[in-house]
Structure formats: C-alpha cells, structure tokens
Length: 344
Image (cartoon, rainbow, N blue to C red; front, side):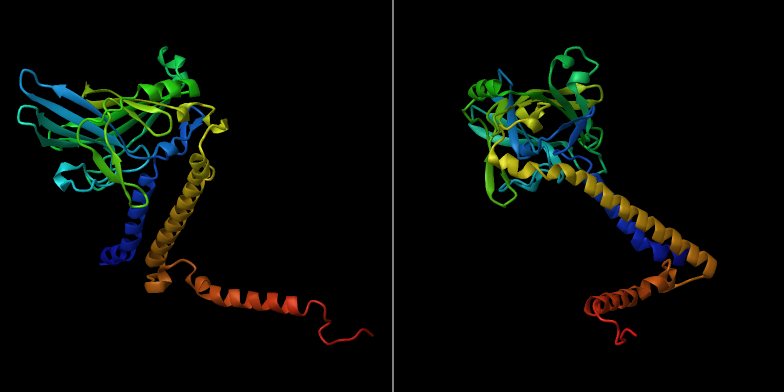
C-alpha cells in the first residue's frame, strides 16, 4: 500500500525527467558548435535541405534506379508537400534516401523505398544519432592528416526494421578556400535530373531542393558530393564529401562571410553552455525534491504539500518578499529624515 501511494506521488516527477531526457537528447548535436580535438567548427549556415542523386542502370533492361539523398545537417527534415506519408522517411530523419524505379521504355516512374539513414528517432525504436567527430589533421590516417576539416559520422535505425541493416552516414567536411570555391562552383552540374524534393523553410514557405546529380551547390560557395552507398561490416554506409569554407579551421576569423551568415553566428556559439547550465540546475532541483519527498514520506508519513522539503519556508516566501519590499520602500522614502526626533 505504501509503495502504491509513493509511486502515485512521484509519477509526475518521473514523467518530467523523461521529457527532460528527450530534450537533452535532441540537443546532443549542435551544428553551430562542433568540437573536434579542441578545434571548433560552425556549420550552422549549411543547415538547410540539400540533395544529391545517383542512378543505377539495369541494362539490358530498360529500367534504372534513381536514389535521391536529401539531408539537413542541423535538424530533422520537414515533411515534403504533396508526397504520401508512406513515400517519405520517418519523422526525425536528418538524412533520407528516396529510391524510385524509372522505366525508360514506358516513360514511367514508380516509388520503391524511403530509407531513413540518420536522424533522431526517440519515438521510433530509440535509435541514437550518436555523432562521431574526427579532426582530419590529427587523424591516425596519414592521408587524412594532409587535409583540413573534420569527418562526421551519424547513425540511424535498421532498415528494414526487421532483419535489416544498420544505417550510417559518413560526411567528410573539407576546407575550401576562395579560389577552390570558384572552381568548384563552375564544376557543379546545372542540369537537373529526376524528381524534386519539396520542403518547407522556417517561415513555412515552400522551397525546391532538387537534386542536380552526384554533386550539389550548397548555396554558400561549397559543394556536396555523393561518393558511395554500400555495405561496410554489418552496416549500410552513405559516404559524402562536403567542400566548404566552414570546414576551415580559421573560418571564425575570416571576414568573407555574407551578411546573412554574420547575423546568425554571433550568439549561437554560447547557447550550448547556457542550455546545459539550465539543464543541470533543473536536474539538481528535481533530485532534491524527489529525495526530500521520499524522506518526508518515510520518516514522517507526510502527505500532500507536506511532502515537499521546506514546505513551510516556501509558503512564507510571498510574505518574506512583501516584507522586504516594504523595507526597501521605507528606506528610499525616509532616507533623509531622522524619524521625527530632533538633535539635542
């Protein structure tokens, strides 16, 4: 009987802690403050949907498989408009692969698969994004040490859910200086192929993020390139290469960012510290209330409001504050008087 009552009392607090755990998990990857071997990178300006595409020919059959990889490196993708739910990836997907079968003889296109490669799936199997970040200059590989940037690995669920392969994405962010940026931009294919992926931006307006082949312009002078999507061990790994100025280790000191980038990067780098500070304070307060309530229940058989530690003091807080305000007002109003007495 005592256990049942105690569970009833602490159940709401437990639910709050579970919600807080979900919030903490959601904030576990901050693209504005990526730390790799004491080096910080801010790729938040790249936080918009971008797509690359690859095609597999099935000759001599007049069919081919078109796979479009759409990703948002900073947050989960928003649902595409005009596409059935079963033809889109699970909620929480940050990297989504859409496979379609194209029949050139019949001039038709049919949907095959929607594969969630990486994302935050707390409500779908509890799969963790589990970001793994490696600074290339200090990598154990000699070839990596010649590069500037970092490698980011993001994890996803099994697909199919039963007896499927674990999904994973490995993105190599490489530093791109101004001269390389101009050459890279000229090399991006301009001709669009395949169906587009429609998304919504933060203002709710529809944006068209069509794939432009195995490379795509990121809109900031850089290029995202598809490398491979194959089985490695027990996982299906998507390999991408992203050449961008935001992967340069001195990117924060450069003055070559456009005005939009300057507007959003100043205060966001400190957001992580304050977020964790608030979370720690909340967890400490919750632990104190739970432990104090448990002591009051077991020692004094307290019920209701009396379960809360120092409940009498908490009840007196409004009166203490009111008395303190009265003293402050009296001090300000009567600071120059002698209280009605005259000097002798």
